[in-house]
Length: 504
Image (cartoon, rainbow, N blue to C red; front, side, top):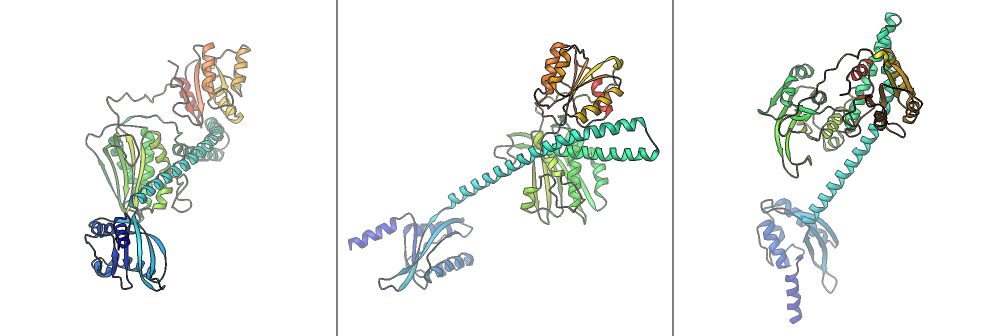
């Protein structure tokens, strides 16, 4: 008798949820922990003699799952399952349940029982960790793609620089027949399109040269109404809304306009039968743990939304990858979203995508709002080429022969005396040998000493030296802000304009 009481006390004191049923699903035994758990998730307190099927009759799905599991055990099977139970009113919990058949001493099956425990918190933590790991993998994947993309884009800029430079010189000289001039213009148009493509790649890689400034996003969006309306076509209704009193945001207006146009084109393509395109700009205060993972603060949220075909989860995860597109061959580059994603990140913001198949897509660009008085925007005006350029000597430094040759031809056409060097070391040797220079035009990324380091070295020898740093792409911190820069590829007019901006 004492042993039976001891067993009963242990049964009731167990933290596990224990229940024993006979072959007709009548409860033979149930411990206190399981009774309390029934009350917590179903609002009922079962007792010995109650029938499981009857207890859960008002909850058909729960009844079916419980009977199905116990039926397997009553058929002699031993197994463990993870299952969710609860009526939805009192809450739903996840349980790890081990079912086993119950035999009498003679070996006859007389029932079935289970031991279970609540693993809801553990499952949630596992899901949270899995989500974090997936975000980390995605982040690493995008960083790797970005690094590769940036490197490829830099090489393409080096290739495009002599192509565009030489074509530009040919166009200025008007050689050959009218047909030959048309061919040259066609080649230049193709080269310009390639340069635009490279800029989008650099935007994705967060390496495009930007001129961030305080921008009135509301005015910018309203100013694009006509062009968006012309682009969308008659079947699509365009609605534009801007918050009153919207703060200025840190942005590059030209790149933001391009991003809006790209997103608008994507939205229109997703609505072949027509629909509504909504472009909005609103003032948002972001707190901690925001989905963008941006620092808390004030942001301008730019939204481009459509009522089109939408995207599934798999497509959303890949949407910002460069060249990924759900459109047919020849119907887009697959760079619109990747460019907008990289641009937002480079400006200190973020991009989010909400989409459902058959409902539509909402792409949002979050930009940091300007806090305090907005600084003056930089002046984009350029002067004419400096008078007396013919007597100025330029030291041109670039480790790529084709780039150096085309740039030298441009400079010569502008009237400069050009001395070429294939590296910073060669340039320093020329100066040591007595070369006097007025202007240094140098590539930025070169083996050994960089263009910036070369400029600093030569400025010590020639305090009034004019410097122009040239690069396929420039990170914000790569070049000192006091050194003028020119981005590859460029035309002769752009080179002349930058050289016209005298130091100081």
